[in-house]
Length: 251
Image 1 (spheres, rainbow, N blue to C red):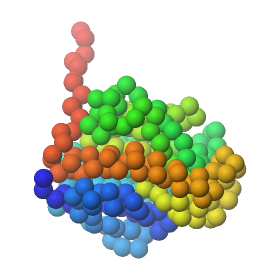
Image 2 (image 1 turned 90 degrees about the vertical axis):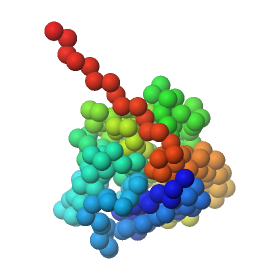
Image 3 (image 1 turned 180 degrees about the vertical axis):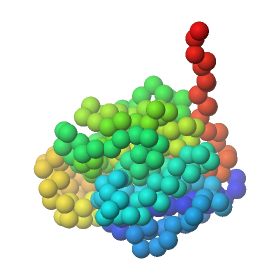
Image 4 (image 1 turned 120 degrees about the vertical axis):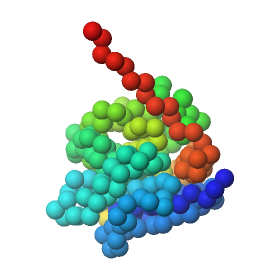
């Protein structure tokens, strides 16, 4: 398997790639990490075999406060046009959804915060990245904006009762997950300290050290193999999802 070069966009200093970066490297990837708020982004995706966009505390359409969101969404759109393996995480998933024509708004049912489970949808069982995940994968939530409308060409892969659009695929190989798989206990404890208003949505004890340690052990067990499959997808060693058949209109 060749070594795929992945562009990692880190929108927020407080959300580094963490264990996910280790998993990607261990699976054979080379990472080019860019923080668009402090460093330049590439003009195109030439020379990259995959794209990962991480999370952040800003809203996905807050271009006035964060003008670099525009080129981030442009790169995500380019990845879609080029059928480049792509993974958007939390804010990254929201940016991917907007780039493809979806909608993101503040969640009407309040924030999702803490360790949780999502449920796979039928389409996930035949998806190259999601098929081997358990029926209800462990995830970590920390967001108040949600994807209220998926792009028209998206396939829903995982859902939850409060906010249904938890994981999706656009086209053959662009994925978005409305949760975190890259965090550490220390990172989310820092988030909790920085955004105390979000904590009212968390279960009692959700951010205690032992609870977070177990939650992140569960995340690693579930999502490290997923990260390895993403690297195989970027390297061309794993086939992307089949293209949707086009149906002619009935006359």
